[in-house]
Length: 320
Image (cartoon, rainbow, N blue to C red; front, top):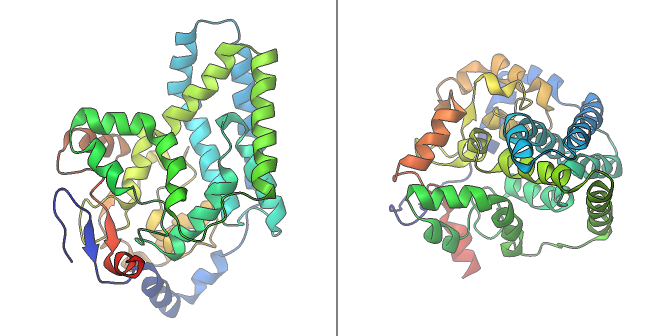
């Protein structure tokens, strides 16, 4: 295992989740009962999408700064929850049929103003299968990305602001991934048509509210610490981290990230039960108690940057 402040941490070890999953199932076979789907998630999608569109409607004619404030206080949490539900759809944890999960993800994408659920599904499943593989795990930043934004407060703040765009570029690095398919085209038609309708009938401030909600939900906001929490190395060589705090209530337990990686077929509402069933496997792991504290640490601690990620050395050697 090797690395430096201006490079990733390289590991020759396999990703940790397969072995832990096998061991947990050996000692706690009852965990299998938690595997399944949660169709209620689709009702949540409908409710949150309707909520965001209703708020956008009532902001019509208001000053732009009102949209900014409401997006920071409310919209960010709503859009973030929709991203969690898109994640559930990507793992087919809402419906049995793949097509219905794709449709659920596209509907959840409507307030996000840019289509991303279909491509997210493709590269996120690769992230689980090839965690730490530089050419197959789009959750890893580009090398140029880590170098460009560096270790400074302003660099990392700019990265958070641009994160939605940077994340959209990462799938281009993935090998043997089909970016465009019929579902991608359908999602583009649905989302961009929705954007046009919102601007036409609600007005620009309403649309701006949704744009602000998008940026705050995955960028410059304490909620943005969720992406830092999951795999940024704060206690190496551990490479996956969970968050056990009150924001899991509005974030639909997305903080239970070790549990999710160990059991991808367990829906969001049952992830805490995985930890309760096999506590000895999780209580000895480093975890986060506060997204706000982590967010501030990421911004101000020069020792924590985009380089604070684990990369499988074999992935670079095989690519060469």
